[in-house]
Amino acid sequence: MQIAPPDFDRLFGALSDATRRDIVRRAIDGGEGVAELAGHYSMSFAAVQKHVAILERAGLITKERVGRRKVVRTNLEALRVARRLLDQYEQLWRDRVERMTTLLAESGKETDR
Amino acid sequence: MQIAPPDFDRLFGALSDATRRDIVRRAIDGGEGVAELAGHYSMSFAAVQKHVAILERAGLITKERVGRRKVVRTNLEALRVARRLLDQYEQLWRDRVERMTTLLAESGKETDR
DNA sequence: GCATAATACAACCATACGGTTGTATGAGGA
DNA sequence: TCCTCATACAACCGTATGGTTGTATTATGC
Image (cartoon, each protein chain N blue to C red):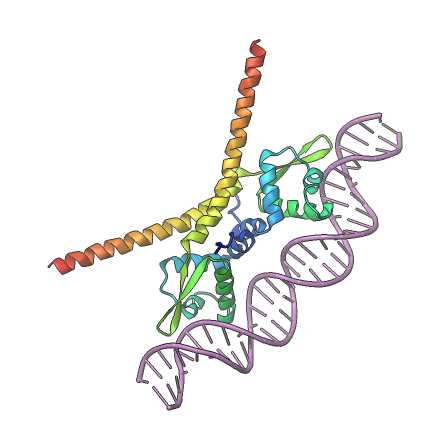
């Protein structure tokens, strides 16, 4: 079986809402069910449920049945996947700076002739 | 004057589209104007222009007039702002692991009594 | 100075998103 | 058992988003 490639649209899309980022932060410690999470926000339970579903589809959280609740827990690996993409961009930036530095050094040699 | 706090909604929202992420990647090297960028995609010039505008509002790119074109360049700092937030989440995760480890050690001591 | 290349903006359309209320499902506890 | 707490799902509404075409602005190159 193939592992699914990361869906960056869903990943960053899920992170583009303040409520969802707050849920991600809270769910790092885990232990709270959907209803408990909903208690922190001034919106309906169903709205929070939708946010949780979006985070789940993006792979950013998982739900685990505990008693009659479903405990929400952040998935560290998804956060890392997002971070790695940003790291790649920064690496491209460094590569570019290096190439420019090399070019400058080369042209320096030329002027030495 | 205060510097504006990062708008993570706009930041991650801008990154949630594949075309925009590709523009960010291409604009790291810079040198291309909006029209040149548009040439890479199978959508209208105006659509690409809108994507560029969204990236600009999010602070992810800047435009600089060069000749009769406006050259698009990625803003490294905005990428770092996004990455730092993800880093913070990972740090919270490590803090939690550490707290749990400490707790386990404490309870270990208790069982020693 | 003028034609035009490059960008910007406006209006419009279809669909997605964030929110609501209401109803259905489903597992636990008394 | 069966009541009920916790979650899930459906339908709906207003607005934002991603795309289109068309028109306006603007600075530069000739």
